[in-house]
Amino acid sequence: MSDSRLNLFSFTGKTRVLHLTWMAFFMSFMVWFNHAPLMSILRETFGLSDQEVKVLLIMNVALTIPARILVGMLVDRFGPRLMFSGILMSAGVLSVPFALAESFEQLAVSRLLLGFVGAGFVVGTRMIGEWFPARQTGAAQGIYGGWGNFGSAGSAMALPALALWFGGEDGWRYAILTTAVMAFSYGIFYYFSVSNTPKGSTYFKPKKMGAMEITSKRDLLLYLLFSIPVYGALALLTWKLGPANMAWLSTELSNSIYIGITAIYLWQAWKIIQINKAVFTETIPEMYQYSFKQVVILDLAYMVTFGSELALVSMLPLFYIDTFGLSLVTAGLLAAIYPVMNLIARPAGGVMSDRIGRKLSLTMLFSGIAVTFLLLGQVSAGWAIVLVVGNTILCGLFSKGGSGAVYAMVPLIQRRMTGQVAGMVGAYGNVGGLIFLTVLSFTTPQAFFMVIGFTAFAVLLAIIIFLDEPKGQTAEVMPDGSVQMIDVT
Image (cartoon, rainbow, N blue to C red; front, side, top):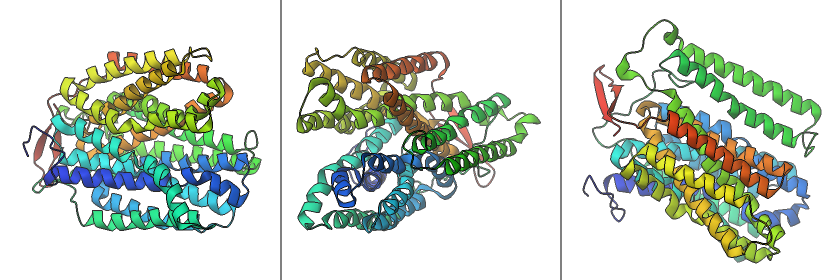
């Protein structure tokens, strides 16, 4: 294979690693969402109320936000080969209690633990970043993210039919257990099929564990500030489950969780300062410096791109039904177009980033996101449904392409911390989904679309004003103390 071309029909070298890794991501998402297509069966089997169904859906994403931060640290330390294998095998084990559950409480606890599986995406980002050069990283990351993301659609298409094939009142249990066996088996296979880096390359690790390394006092302040929304999202989840909303958590338990979240943030802030205290007394050599504002802008960008995707996948079917009076089947089919576009749009965003540049591609894509969502905010029942669906498709193309362009840049910030950068950016995607769905719960779909559109416009301005195009090289220290320069152009 030529070094300048990405031959997807090859199954050797780095392309083999790409295919094996997006399949690992596919498996993790298949398990993470293996409950969604079977929810109607679960509701009937366990006699779940609408409130309890909502609790299960929230539980499935609750741990994903902090898990992506934690997994980002662990993958930088222990490598993607071990981490992805471990996550897949854990996914298989954790699916068993869900499949064997006999009560709503057992379903909820096992779903909460399975939220950890959603952090698998972060691991593959580091693996692909190790195997592909800067000029191909956008295309490779886009294929990894777009094709792997289809695991949720794979569950939606396969599990109801599988449950029906097994038959009986326990058919859904066997369908869940099938995904458990597949994930566990693939985890073992993945471990023996890949390596962290190409032969002869060095796997760079952070000097310290527990927080990202920062190279200036201003960046340290930014890091502390932009860590807050991750913990704020957990507080928001607690509030939604608490007595003021779903009433699944008592006042005492809610308050205890709030105190715990605050304590964890304060501990993390102390850890960040401890690891980076050298910035107060030393000047970091220029060759090792990087700008944390790059991470901040990618955080905000992914909050819009992936956050809007999570929100629209959840609300589009009901939006079509309530606004245009469509049948459940028709609304479901039209809404399904949106997630399927990940197969082409996310890789296309990565390719675009490789070809025309990181900043220009994000500028163009966010212009499209802002315009199409603001247009959706004008939709009424008088609109032709074909125009609404067409505009929704454009929204999907721009936002999923934007996700591809964001992760095309993630591995170019600082190689040894790619996992941590990917973890923080990924967590912001989940934060965005939670914020946008919370907005939807208080207002109309049109206002919800407008909020996303104006947020995208604000991020567009930040990209234009503050984002720097990666160029030149970054420096990493080899185990023997020598310095290796890595191309990011």
